[in-house]
Length: 419
Image 1: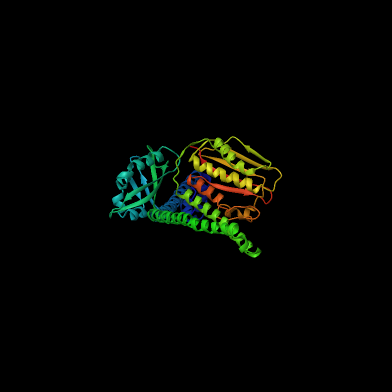
Image 2: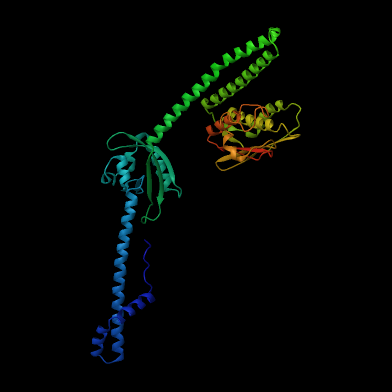
């Protein structure tokens, strides 16, 4: 409901005059008892003034009704919000709490009010909580933290707190509004997901490792047949043997890439200061050996340093540069450019080439394991390289994406923490 505006002086006078004009009986009786013009005028002014007071009283009554209705609706929204709300004074004492907060902590609202919110925070998390409140009160930005909260009935909750300073509560130190969200179920799901991923990665590692033995045997026997018993095979038999050899080699590459992918997943990130520019030049020195006599122009610009695991980031750069080298195979002169841009919290890096490119509607498939947008005969490989890049960058808390056009090249971007 829109807020009622107070009447201006002119508007109030107009309304009062209109009201007095509708009461001729009162004016007529009073006019019978007086004769002078001044007296008539004075009586009229008194009547108008009385009418103004009546109008103001009626407007005030309506405003009070509207205010009460607004307050009721506000309290309904406050009390039954999907998250718990607390209003804390400068000492961290709860001055107001909603129904959701009391229900989440399994206590009554009146038990909460007057107690420090820290009373319900697990003792091991109080240092984090106190720093969280100090940050919220000393800044105009919203502060966020995750702490364990004690329930009145016993047990602990995993909660996310978001707090912000309330500017217009009263004169003096600012109050704080804290929103509490129960994330216990979310944390449990995350643990289950992590356990599932670990099991899946363990299976991938074991499967890829164990399957390599039989493949080596198949490839070995195929080679023996080809070298030691050539007269026992006719042309069709030799063709079959060639298909067996080619497919075992392809399977070996797939298993090797699957093993590399699973190893990347389980490997822990050991962060340190990385000279990304030197790392990119070192990675290119390794990749350039695959170029042979091809005409390749490489441009590695200034790349700002970052925080990360040096060996893992080197692997990501090797994969991206190898990808560019592979998809520029049809170019008379392959052009590969590596650039970086410094940011506040993270740096952005890019590897661009003038190769085959891709259709952007398939961009989401680029970083999926063993997904390919080009045929293996046209461009050899298993498609695992970019998946490993994504896994490495995401383990560093970064992002990776690509842009391109068919036959106009592609650019791969990734971010890393600046510090």
